[in-house]
Length: 136
Picture (tube, rainbow, N blue to C red):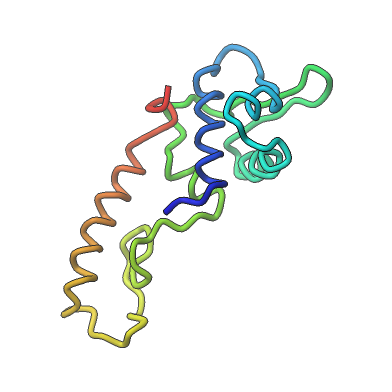
């Protein structure tokens, strides 16, 4: 399950996607509109800015905007920028690469890994395909 931080980030970015090309958006209005604690949103936006997904302007009329068009920012980019992990089972990471089984089982004969690996690959493909423009 995605963390609250990641869900807040996606909700906040949906506002910036909607406002893309207009003007910068004050963080306070995003926090108020999406019922996100502003102090929490500050930390989220700092991570997203450091990852290159956001641009900020300081001052009284300061705020945030997306650094790229909404159609170019994938949902997976947002998740990874926040350090989120969306693996379904621990022996597979988001890109479908296998790691050792925590139970010591043979990967080739593990039906659970096969089933959830297939589901995870579909989820990964969807997160790669969906962008912030899908949230507008």
